[in-house]
Length: 329
Image (cartoon, rainbow, N blue to C red):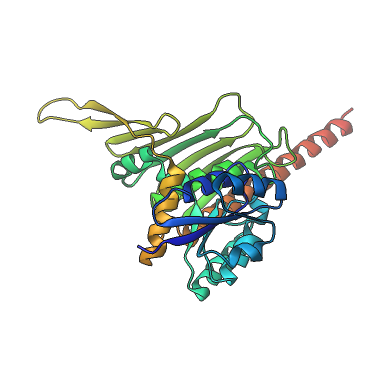
């Protein structure tokens, strides 16, 4: 296996962990980090004995692979620069802010012969990997992803910040083309949408009900999948899951058989980065490709559009109700 020289762009809350794993993963050697803050870049670089850069070009001259863990608003420009330099890239979710940006990155990676992977790390959660064989043709999916408020990630709506994890998971179950999206959401503590719910109907008959909040008092990361004769409940935090099956012996009434599962404590991010290194070395399609990241962003955009329509419709209804009230005073 070729030892790949790795760099990290953006070493804040999440990027520092990319650097930590590259420094110890077989198949990779961390050579440098880049951050808009020279102080932050030096702090993380000194921690691992590598070079600190504030100029992206300086880092790109030294590396084979790059993690882009900058704020979401910088994903497109940073990833584009890396791909144009011929580097393989793992960009944190979402792949970009707009569908047009995502399409440009996917096409650029193909032209440059570069591997583009998107950081939907929940795919690598050990409990998700263990439960995936149990999920076949879901009829109904329910997702809850709730967090307390923090400044990180508030440069975008909660749909792009948190919900997109679950949108990617739903799409990974191959539910078919999207048929209808209904959604609502509101800002609470930031200028962007902080809590949102979406109901997504797919042409194959599957329906997903997805809720995301970054203004909740309790943290929750849960996925429930209902399908014929089987129900799968996954808790991503505790890495526990329950599979309930319908069992019916000949001549007897059906009963429910329940099995509980517990996954290990491997870090999803480490598993994700290892898969990225393997894909680059083997020339194989990544687990979460640029196209997968684009599909998740496209669905997130449909959700945001549906929220916008819902908000406009109800704002108009409220204005009409006020006007009607005045006319009848």
